[in-house]
Length: 354
Image 1: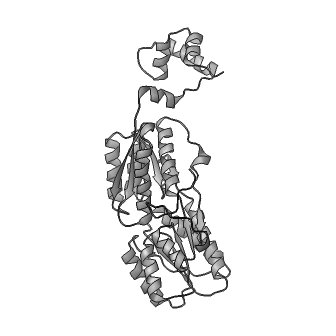
Image 2: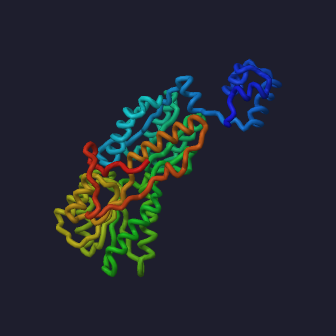
């Protein structure tokens, strides 16, 4: 039978009020008495039900999600999932707010983190930019006891508590493996379209992809990265220029957003047979798959990531360990033949597990 606070009080020979003071680290208990209570806790193997304690105290968990603004369909889908979560967690004593910052802007992100900490939040989830000022801001949040989760793009060099996202090196290697299989013996270089190499998910995907391309046969040449800043207009111009400059191009790997521009450039060029692999099942990549312009899309479940972030932040705020198996985000692969129905609100793939 699980020990209770009554068992602790009886074993230590103290009142329930004294046990409560010790469990909640409140003053007014002599050192010798505190030692008796702590010894009874250890002897009985008492494990406190933090969730029940917080419920009794009416504790509210204020959480902040910091998400890039702009036209990136995946980020807009991520934000939509957060806003849906705002309604779902009403009875879980969790308040959630969203802060938007310019994409790839390290200074703005660091300032938003500091502002959230100053607002006395319990936890922060943010899409990280790989920059020293962001690492410093996360470390300041940690020093203030604020739980921190990186979303989609990690920053392992910081003191963040957890990363909610796919293994991006594995995602890049998966894209490389698909590209190598689709192209077979066909000659020609491969182009890479990224948003910005200042985010770790893009650099990690490129690392994994390039490694597999180097291993494929005699080694397939990967051209210099085209950084489209996740802007479809810029991406279209960069891809059109690349197609004109490299008439023997064999494939394009789009490891970021701006895919509406990619699809438009390929439609305008009329380039049949070009292998194209992209990330995230959004309206532009779905349209590309349906038309045959895009061959495969690697996808991560934004809903799972948001729910995972909330669970982890709440667990960390309570000093508890999250369930690792529940928080693992999988990599899905979609081709034209296995497209799921779109979410009626976001246009993305329907939510999966988590």
